[in-house]
Length: 231
Image (cartoon, rainbow, N blue to C red; front, side, top):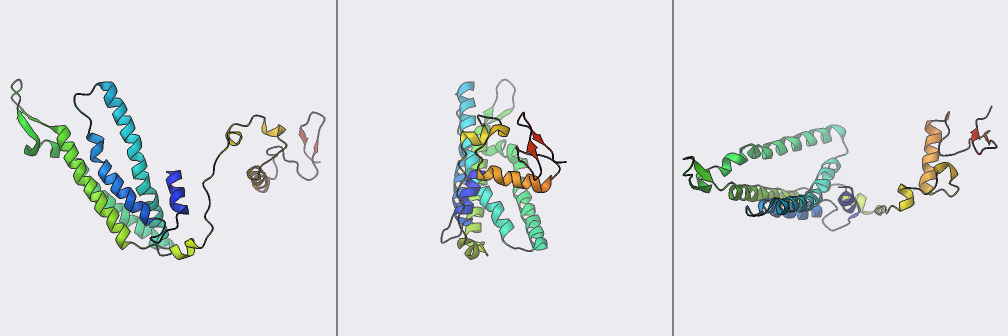
């Protein structure tokens, strides 16, 4: 989510920075949804496990490509707090309406469309539930694609021209030392800009405490290298 959101934030295209991702993400998510049920009933448990794991991880990226710019675009349509609140409420309502068919997904797979025949042992009708799930997800995937295309065509990024002139921030590339320093923070003498910023913020927020080995005016280090507060 953070990576795809950053890509969307930094994108500058003739169609805006949100709508292209919404279009591509909706098509990928719509086509990929029925693929989640393409497993074979003849596979072993190990094969099913790896298929479910890999397909779920891949599909999560498709949904992120759609969701991150979609939610961001909704918040950027208006600068007015009350208008944005009403907009988010309306969007939430539409989402819940689209989710209603999910409650009837299993019943759909147990209809005559997917009937296999009578089980001789039980006398009950049997159904090809896997095929039914594929068809149901194909229908829901088509709805996702249609909604994505409509968002791309009908919704406009009202303030994109202002954003387009702004500097594009780059994705932060973390180094190992930023996460797991080799030395205690109190022994570090070379400090990055990030550390200096954090130090200044902590000094402003908590002037009565010492953070990250920062000396305040009037403080002197003692013989052991520890900081001694000013009188």
